[in-house]
Amino acid sequence: MKDGLRIAVVGATGAVGKELLSILETRKFPIRELVLFASPRSEGRATVWSGRSHRCKALQKDCFEGIQIVFFDASDSISKEWVPQAVESGAWVVDNSATFRMDEDILLVVPEVNGDLLHSKMKSMIQRSVIPRERILAGPNCSTVQLAVALKPIRDRWGMKRVVVSTYQSTSGAGSAAMGELSVQTVGLLNQIPSAPKVFPHQIAFNCIPHIGGFQEGGETSEEQKIVLETRKLLGMPELRISATAVRVPTFSCHGESVNIECERPIILEEVRDALRAQAGIILQDDCKHNVYPLGVTFEKDVVEAATGRDAVYVGRVRKDLSLDNGLNLWVVSDNLRKGAALNAVQIGEILLKAIQ
Image (cartoon, rainbow, N blue to C red):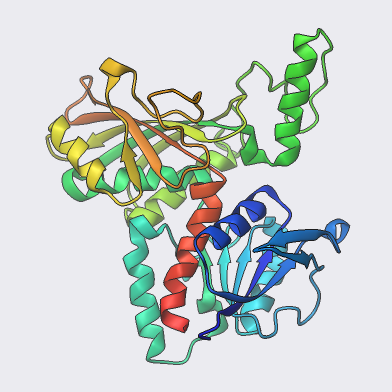
């Protein structure tokens, strides 16, 4: 394995798949052979990676033989059918779908939050034989990733009783067609040519839609349910009280989150800022006197570094919530395609490398 591993990417032509391939190259992931899988309509499509052209293949029986790590960036139905086949073939799987996230025997991972659990798991596996299902590692929902990274230093230092989060999620979270719909509608409306919605249930241009995922029996959406359940699992706090509201907003990149935390112990704001600065994966942008706070996009000479295309979770607007004891407010922004999905998967893969090389 000194010359690299045989790596596969399922969903290579999608928005997250493309981002993942770029990150594998820039982070110099040791790849001897790269195998790309996509939908039947994309079969044969050429993708350039590391200066070489790779043709996308369709999934078929025994297609994972000899592959050591498979990154899945496809639908839940694809993961449900093909992830078991991949691990039965002997591969490790990093799956970004929701299929296995909440299974008790599957590790849900954000390396900056609970990477120690994955390190421990890999060490224990070296000592014994591994059953196929143990090779499945799940990545959380993109909104959950940035929330969990921001909450970790607060949990570690001050404890948490309750979290209320409202998300402002870009159209890229719904895929390329959703971004296209925003573009078409925006141009059309500016030229007085309205365009009917196809991807979203309502017009997204110049609008906010409080509806991401399907509505559940209690009125919450599946996206809101994911945020609650996955955050509890990542933080190891199954009883943590969390309320989430997920809103789709007319932007092309990054998710923003307004986070309200009720801590268990009294907080001092400068200590909170120090803890956030020290947390791996976080960049603190918190100088309101100079209009410095997290943003998805900025212009060239702006004093704020935009989150789009960046690895970090940006945190700012750090302030006390004076309406309750030990209350804290944060504003959190991160690139949902990058840290929210592709980068997180590659970081999981980098932990795997240390154990299987």
